[in-house]
Length: 468
Ligand SMILES: [Fe+2]
Ligand SMILES: [Fe+2]
Image 1 (tube, helix red, strand yellow):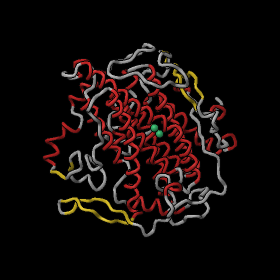
Image 2: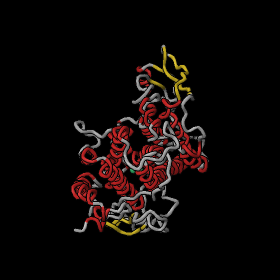
Image 3: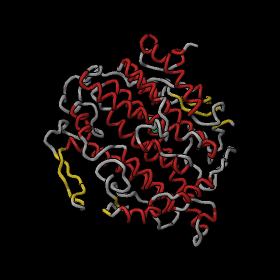
Image 4: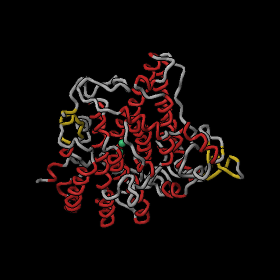
């Protein structure tokens, strides 16, 4: 098989013998992994998918039926900018790194591996979902997200193969060996070891956890390491759709619940086969809090090191900030001291995880506005909210303490007393799972979710998005 003819790319793969050899070894392993850990039960079906075949506006969104194992995963970088400069940190204004600077090799590899690990992890988490799809439209969206996470893995593997020699190749192999939720060889970040086994989980995951990806990739898209910056810029074009799937998916569930509440205002929507608002809220609490952990500790010397080195900056660093060195600035955050929450001033460079997290929270609020509008449109007074960022954390300053949903410090006992009000219980999860029956007739939709209001490439909801 002519491997290179089939891999869409703009990285001169045809002439790069070293990269060809590395991929010759890795691609068959990737395809084996995809068969074993990719969407279960649908590998031979035709799916109406978007494939990127080049980075220009006409090439990155080609729609056609394709069987997932035949998807043309490609390697794309934004065009190089030979005059690019390091945009922040101690080397601000110097020529950007076209290769890996020796002193940053370890830090860069760590950034790449941590990001790269999330891509196959989410495919593993979602592999059973196809069997309970609420419609063919949603099934197609699930698979679109899955194949693109596969391509993001390729993007990171390209950087590991192309710039990190032997240990890069070893890390690329290890990305296919860890498994989400496996106690012996788990994925690196905890949100990516949590089960995502029903569609409410899937929509909350793509809303909140994929959105973490947007902020990590955005920060890296301004990296002084040019190949990384150029890779991340292109990944972001695909990531936007994943968040749309989550945001609009949750919105459609909320809308349907609101309709059922109106039909039967004195009764639990359970009687009508809907998902109660309080369960939706608990799923949001769960995935929002786990996704906050992905930004890392509030006070972090790693984040300072990455910034100083010019590797990872703030969100929209060039656009939003004027001081890109940030040497003498400070940032105030709340920490627990003597059993009380107290403000503490820290060097700004040590608070960059928290600063990126703040941007993320602002972005999440936009989704909330959509869902609450759906409630208001149906004439209901109930509203969805985000928990305080201190609630239910497993990483950082707040992990060692317990907080209520509003961020007040409470005892662990109090937390446990309220746990079932704030987070999904086993019964909640079982109830949601009990609603998950596949609906696969074109134009039909499950009872617990409203149909979409948007089309895919002009195709109406009735279109046969997956040929079963
Ligand atoms: Fe991704
Ligand atoms: Fe994603």
